[in-house]
Length: 288
Image (cartoon, rainbow, N blue to C red; front, side, top):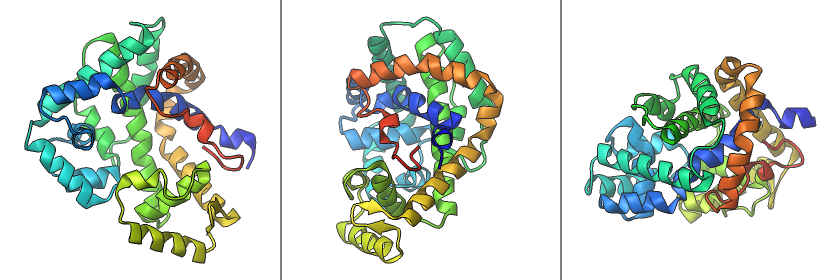
């Protein structure tokens, strides 16, 4: 795989959108807002607030859209959240927390924010609803109506559009959730069953999956085999193809958008608002 392939426009855009859209999952302002409406538990607020764009649906529906989490775990946390508040209240807290956090990190409204929002909205408007449940749910919501809020909402739609497409891609490759989690860990260079541990799969199922991946010649200890690397890169290429309507709508302006977002994404990462720079997770071969 060439360097140009490993740095496609869609992946470069993903790397800068991700910290800005997903800062809400790490922002203290968001956790304070959730606690103020009675949902102080992090996992309860995470699953219900992120999945709430689809409505006040059961946890099984949210688990289906998220893809990689152990469904019984998700169902329990979502049921607990809905026993304490309703979806409209929780989504309002989410929007409040996300906006306050970005305003703090970015120091108010940055120059060129309106231009960045315009481009993100153009990309999101071209997104495909079919097979994209979280993206479709976000599109159904009203725009916040303030500059930072609208920017975050647009970034969130672009983020979830790629995420939904990625789920479709690994399913189309015939993988289970534990399989794609373990393959991705090795692809990123992380210890096996470190990141994936947060997804709640039973230890015996994870161990059986590791053994299966090794037997199939995809995993060798902590590392992917050549076949494993090719499989994971094929998933990412299919994800890129699913993102093409967004990129086509942006056209040559995708590079401008990426450059506008880059320093703001860096500010989020440096503030602790996102755990790592997504670009640093790119492997020497086939990394996204």
